[in-house]
Length: 253
Image (tube, rainbow, N blue to C red; front, side, top):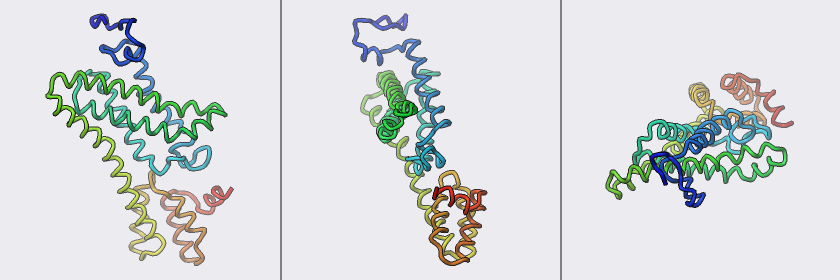
């Protein structure tokens, strides 16, 4: 391989060439397209994965969208930094490895929906996480090789493993903490005092992005006492700005 020209030796196998240093201009373009641009577009135009109002109702992974969006942002940020600066470190390599693992698992979780979506030509978007996983893995490998030559390998490995663990674990811990807080607030809406009810409404307004507000609608449907139904209707209006009966009609259609 001629490293000065940035080209690969064609005698090297195709797969090995994808991970060689330095990267080719075409590989850099591919990495930007499928590691940065494609994930952003998939989040914006998400038809049925994380959105609460997707094609098939609530997205199949809607409950974990805060975790997913945070992981996607971390991965994009780490990849963009490495592609722009080429400053390798074990910390950055571990973060990219974490992004590769997340993208691969996301692709596997979405696979049943992807296969179904292929029948109507939108399933191709479900393959994007696998492309992103490849991009993250390739750049993580390059970053690791560049950084570990300047550091004690055991120390670098420990740093990389810790970075991957933190990149994957901290957002997940935050997601479960929000589940707990939102669950207590939902309970307070139905059985709490007026003071707890008001506090629950404020909490759920802050967590509106990630709160399961449709649970309020289902609780309204199950309620038999007019006072409880009124409390739930007022809470839903305050939290979402929508009428609870209108949302119940949508869910029952």
